[in-house]
Length: 267
Image 1 (cartoon, rainbow, N blue to C red):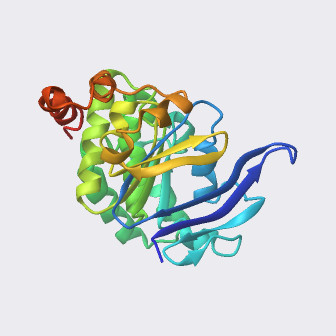
Image 2 (cartoon, rainbow, N blue to C red):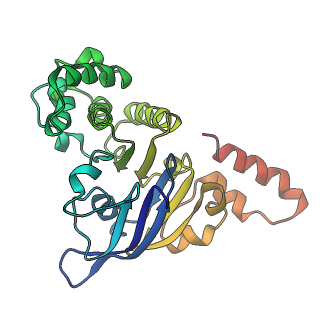
Image 3 (cartoon, rainbow, N blue to C red):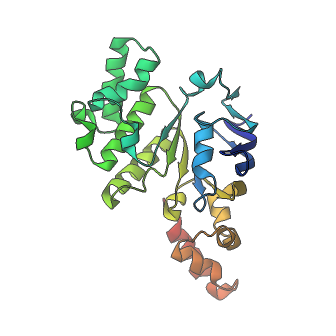
């Protein structure tokens, strides 16, 4: 069984139109998955069902072999966390320290252990010097790192980033992407929902959603060669790959195509 299994998942907000319809995906432990799709394709809804914030109309979700249900949601949420687009929506404490502690308090972790973990994970995300700061005084990138620290402190090994970079300035975005790469190298399973095709290129696999369905789910290098997938889903390829895919399949263009691909897929 895969680390994350989604079987025939269907969801509707109004019982009339399905936002997700018969979604089937398997994700292995330690994989980095990028989820692409136009607005309304079901990306964020999928993320919320995976963490148990929304209850499916039909279908099943398994996390590490355990079915997600009302009874198991508490245990499963120890394994999977989500970082939202707007980090301000995730802050509940007066200080950074309070926010990192929040999830652990809900798990009734002993105080001494909790204090030790706060320091450990704050240091891990380079926020140790900010523990007594008010979240409102942090940059967007710093807020996202605090949210990540809170998830890691709960011993989560799956993190979903739901458009987490879209509201960040270029510096904060680059900083967060750099840290996500570190998390991936540490063996965490990453699911990144994004509109940015260049971010998607960093992933092991790309899941393309279209009208609530899985339109494609393949390894990054394979899917990027299928221009029609992106055209049909109203997604744009990076300029270099668009050019590479447009070149004639002849020997004289082979070296150019390979160089364009090499450039685009640098991680």
